[in-house]
Length: 428
View 1 (cartoon, rainbow, N blue to C red):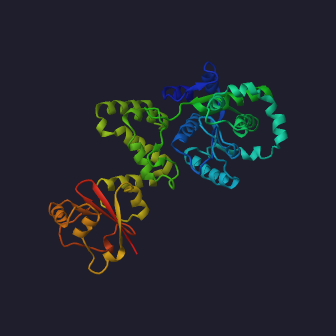
View 2: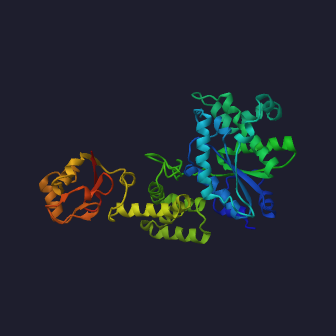
View 3: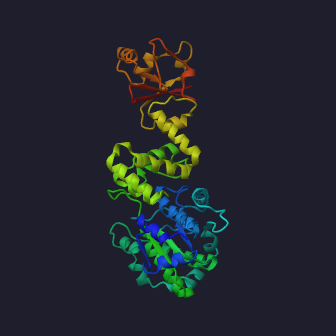
């Protein structure tokens, strides 16, 4: 069996454990069952979710049995850990839809059909929905001293804020997650809980509850939060969160996010999120130090993660879109795809009738797209070989653009020089 603790250690994935001395030997002695929880506040996981999900995958590949828990019940409450204010509660229907979305994404990373140690997917709503309030207080709540709960960082940090309190609803979250651990121990023999560093209080609460209720020793392990070198969370852009769902973040945008990771963060991302060997990662580190402009680390990172989350079809799509932005001919794409590729490119809408009859002269098109200040300017650009439609060079001043020149249903891509793009959108 692979020494998973040593593997996690060199990658920098261990932030804290409940038993540094004993846990490595315990893990190597036999196949263990472990779990990590995922909060269904949206119908997709995001880049930050890759950390615990990839650690579950590493454990499975080392011979252990992973459980991915989707918090259908705890998601109705909201975890106060790391939050500055209470979030809006979701309806049961919204939560169920979110749970379905998360389940589909987990199946792309974990192996649920492995004969020896298949991954297991559970939803804590399945066991929590059967509890009455009185039963939960009697069976679970009585085991939690309030002074201990108040001492947890996730609670204390909120109570110390003058601008945000803590409702009883959020205060009780710790009890729910603690009971999840005990339930998974009873039903699946789960003895180890994984989580990000901000989950330490919830994890240790579950270990305490198991000791009180079952007289057993369970374990906890936390990983660092996925942050940039400046301390901000990774997976955030000017346009919002980077999601794992192709409907929320296209494979192209996902690929581009990793291509554009800062050199200072590339090595950490390779260690945290890929399964590349130590030798390959260290070779990429060395190459990055000598020739950073080649961005080989970022390319390998982008390819590996895009293939994992969006499969080979998604990776091929992302590569093709990238090639298009750098000059490859544009054809057989949709309006949506072009919108994703050229999201930050200026565009102008024109009536579709401009393309019918004699068509739209390419000189007028360059002016309409603001790629030329005047018709004279447009003529000079064409004569100098710097005018392109759908990345095909325009050689003559008399070229008339028609519906056949559209790159998609309604979009035409114009370019001046090497990288100055604009879109013309033609509407009925």
